[in-house]
Length: 168
Picture 1 (cartoon, one colour):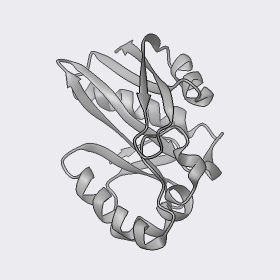
Picture 2: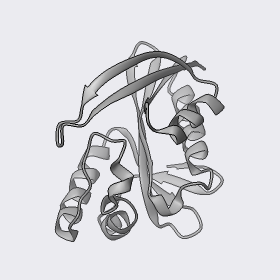
Picture 3: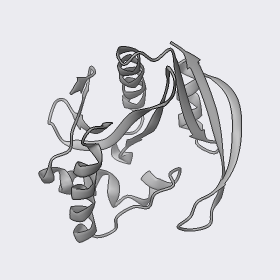
């Protein structure tokens, strides 16, 4: 478990399926800049929660909870790349919680956790069109070092993934 001022990063529980469905998975705008799709039905959300619980085991992958209510509002994580370089594996907050500084808190928590794990460098990625994500990278002192063209599998959308790095 990791805590920030307003958030708790912890492993998912089965009972989180409904708040995750309501706050994140049913909301198409949440997935605008992701390679994964939303879950438009409650049945799919229940199944997705089971997959999420299994996925998070043994990984630096977390469900994001509001500290004040312990309501699940997103997900995040980090993973090793090579050597002493780690990367974020996504920062996702439901749209009702945008604009409150939670992305900043999550990125800070991921950077601190990476340092604890021995990271000397951290990599951050953002879709080129995602202005909020790019602003977060700039605010945190990341420098762009690359851009990659991709095609999202489920709908064929082309996008450019910007790659940023920061020495820790």
